[in-house]
Image 1 (tube, one colour):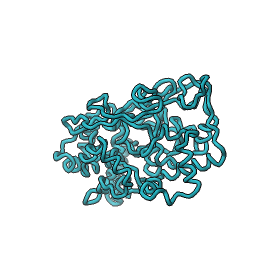
Image 2: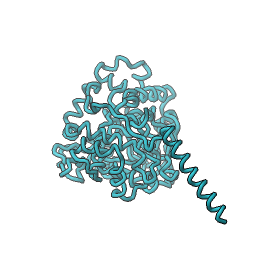
Image 3: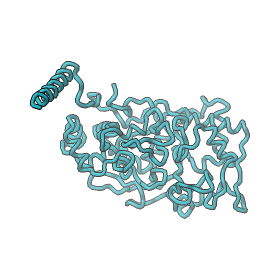
Image 4: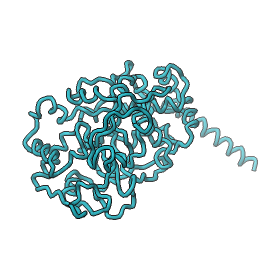
Length: 406
């Protein structure tokens, strides 16, 4: 018996020694570390924006928030966005499901969370979120600030139920104290500062360099005949696309404020329901403030089903997303049911299902479905135009990339 115990102890010690030698000789890193530029990227560079886009941006409440943003804070946010330490078991980051090459959407209908469970909805792209007041498929968040920690704390997505555990984890991580010092002037790591850094990084993701954007400055001289035809179809009263996906951000117009509330941490609340005076809300389909979108937070029912397993915000109503970079964000809809743009266009053209809360633009005068009925050439042209909204510079820009990859 003694001989067996001695042999076992010797074997354990031998394994420990060999593992130590192996780790020393091979140089296995204890953890991945982000590779960052010595001088932070300039996240506020507007040189590539079209003049039209820049003018609209500068004459809205967004300018104040944009001017407040800081490159060191955004750099920290970039690291946090891609760090798997933000999940409870260190396996999933924000960037796991929001992939840059897919305009920060996912490439599958549903995404896998920290325990390999599937999410219930398609991962929406992160595109110009600063310009939106209603976020998630059910529009349950009214600002980026409110949004950013919800996936971190979600029981399927990242599982970090206690933010105290996260702050302690990051405090013990070698590279974070200095990043927080540069960003906020102190090595102290708090939930508020994690939230602010992620907010600023997400808000810095401005996509405004597509072929369409360049066309705003040169009267679309680079558009081919099919793209020009598709643009006309998009804006036509027949297709009605622009009534929901309005320019320049190609989503429903949002509330515009002149004096958004600034809290003690420097965070702007961008929703009129969270503070600030509403001075203008552009007319929405359904009729202004009292219209159908106005009371359902920019969601609508587009006749995907007759009976909805997922009711969305209510009665099968889901957020009207921006369709910028839509060529890159397949599969489409809240459940990822459509794999191609052709399938999406076909749905609107002739496959809308009858439903009591169906958007009024798709209904006839007796409450039935009124098919749009695009011709084959109109469908092809519309898809051609939608591809002009692709911003290749955005999905390849190093400053939005994963800093943990070489």
